[in-house]
Amino acid sequence: MGNAILYYRTPTTLASDPLYDTVAELLSAFPLQCLQFTFPDDIFEGISEQYENNVRSIPIPNQDGSRTLNIQENGLNSYNFTISGVFGKNTAVGIQRLKSFRKRLQVDTTHVYGAFGIQIDNASEFNIIPTPTKGLYIKSTNIGYAGQRTTRYDFQVTLGFGGTL
Image (cartoon, rainbow, N blue to C red; front, side, top):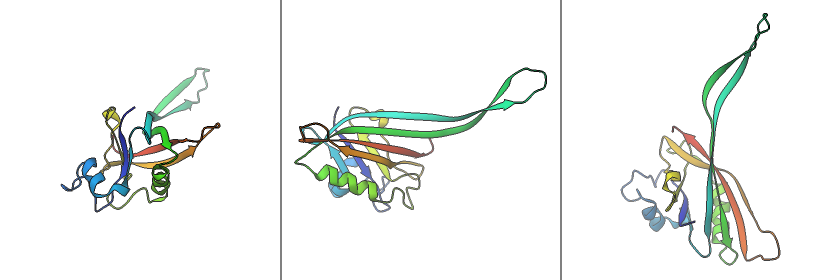
């Protein structure tokens, strides 16, 4: 698919800091905060977006036999991204970094909606930069392989969105 970076911010590596306002600067200064997907070892293969509104149907009881459903608008129910790809078996850095990412605190005092961000070179409509008003957090990860060829590990990460769209 292309180059992509999954990364997290901390209160000392804010996107508003001129020293770290781009992912490239963050990657250069704090490489352990970034998981970079580059061909041919760590490959970012795809991203999907799942958006769900919180709309409720409320039945209205009536005596005349007519049927009515009222609709209650409750805003956003969930907004998730699922990224997937493969890690090269000889480059276990990606696997270990992903395992450390999922164990760290997903929010901090500055990034109260999620400290993670994603940047995808050729799918910029999915890029999210963690700020005080929005961010991503890791909901779940899957890592493994199937079959006889164990030279590549598949991975899937579900990222939840927090904040204001």
